[in-house]
Image 1: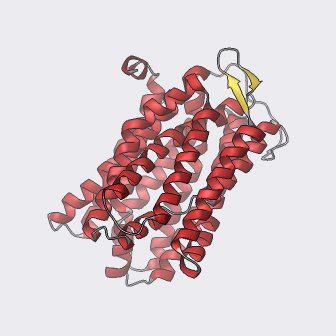
Image 2: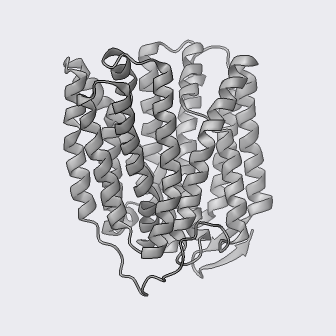
Image 3: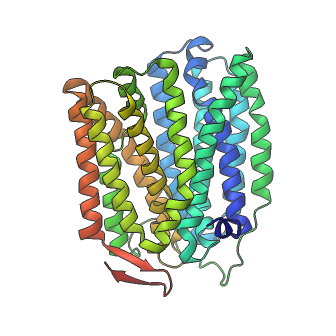
Length: 399
């Protein structure tokens, strides 16, 4: 396993390192934004909702746009460099804002950068590795991404414990921004066999296989039951986990996902993407119904959260590897654009529905709803999507 990981192409490692550094900076600052908003900018929760809602919606739409553009130009690097550069410039400038509308502008620029780079990055990652190693490559990327989610909050904790002002912490984010930009400029794209085709801008799913369209429906259904992780932390607090331990609980989840993402995603290269995804969705369903049924904290709660880390490890990279498997030649950017748009677009209604069920009915109903979505998605994956790519022959076979 280690030998296979070390043998991955240079581009795969560079993309992983960029995600590690960028997410360390992002996760260092993200928990501080609500605090900065209230203590420095004197803005309320409504302002935060406007900021995050506009920013995330923009990122979702741009992921499709950038994916289509990559297929037209067959160039991913410029979008990756520009996307990480735009986000990197915006973060330290937060230290100079004096009102929440300016914070909106900077958060907007950060999400624009994410929207422009995500689909090109995924398409380049898929193009840089053979089909039979896609699970391994995407798993390594997700492992390094989750490593950033562990490192970032730890850095924030160390800096805050040294009584560093919030403004100074935002200013120091220029360092990882420069590192990300340097690594992105070092990327080499694979040689293009043919010249880009000059055809009209087309974002539609017309040329996509029926199996991919069905897969998007399943992803939409699962995402509808996959609300904000903040609800998990809220539930942990209600069950009795001390407030000081909740960030540590979430870091533990990220750490488990980091440790197992590469191995579990690589396993999909051997046992099949859908088989592993179904296992992951079933694990998600068990976790959610278990959390809904619990009445107090204890060892079982921590076991459940560890189980959730394994779900993340078994699905994040595999979902994207399956997109690459299903995408027609020359359409991987568009396929990743639609995948990223679908997951992004359903995150907001997922959280709205979950929050409404949680507050107006009960936590058990809310967690049961999410569990049901995951179970139905698993069934549809097997009996409705049910197509795997034979990575040795490059053809599709029916499960």
